[in-house]
Length: 135
Image (cartoon, rainbow, N blue to C red; front, top):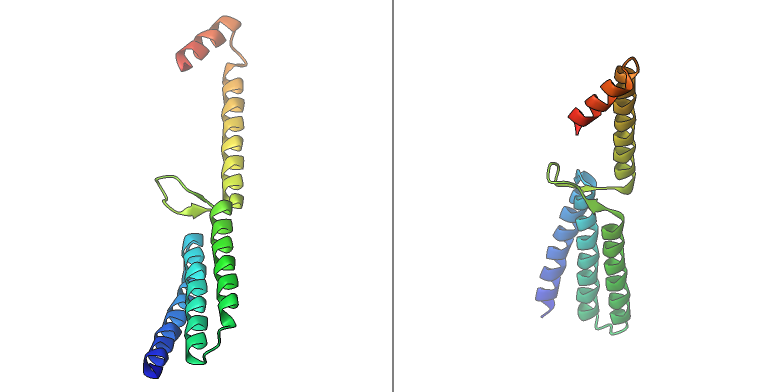
């Protein structure tokens, strides 16, 4: 039994290293969020193996607390970020969404300004005709 727990500890150590690598290199917020969630799960495994190896029943409370913190952090990340459109298929942050909306508003204002400059020399009948053609 002792050897199985040591082997499980070694596998968990490798899992921690690979997860830390993904947490550092992950290009998107989704990669980092998944790596954080996995790191929490691996930490729960490490504590469970330690509790079994050293016969410590008091670590079970810590397992429950860490599992709850992991769940709450995953839910928070999911709440803060939203899925992007089909064209980029990645999770975008709230700041990126706000910047995208500001850019769209600026483009709309510029289009309206260009349209008003084009129609400023026209008569009201010509403006109505252009508006009808645009619809």
